[in-house]
Image (cartoon, rainbow, N blue to C red):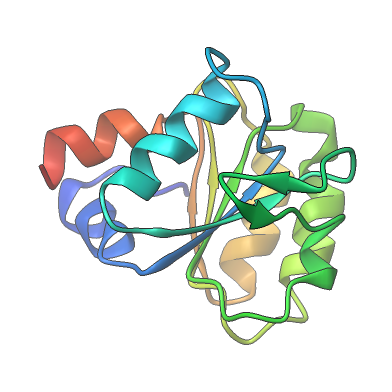
Amino acid sequence: MPVEDDDTLREILDADTIAVVGCSTTPGKAAHDIPKYMLDHGYDVIPVNPFADEIFGREAYDSLSDVNEDIDIVDVFRPAEEAPDIVDEVVPRDDVRAVWLQLGITHDEAGQRVEESGRLFVQDRCLKVEHGRLVD
């Protein structure tokens, strides 16, 4: 079951590093503005976008598999049908504590795989909204 309770959401948000799959270079898009908000609130944001060289002054990685830094949260701004492939990249990693599908994105099967791997799973919630509600 995806995380629903505020205490567990707070636990997830007590993180340092967020890899944003589908991070956008375009201001005004949620996939740009939400990671920027998280960056402005002290998180280390790692952009993952194979079509960008750099976002927020940071190297943009082609995939999660290319990220050598430790990641706490994988935040997903991609269509739901891509979630299983993203989870395929998460499962072999030892560092990821949670996978977060943004508002409007759900994939129960991918979520079940995340949970079976011992991680937390959030879907259909906005990272910025939950941060503003629970942390700020």
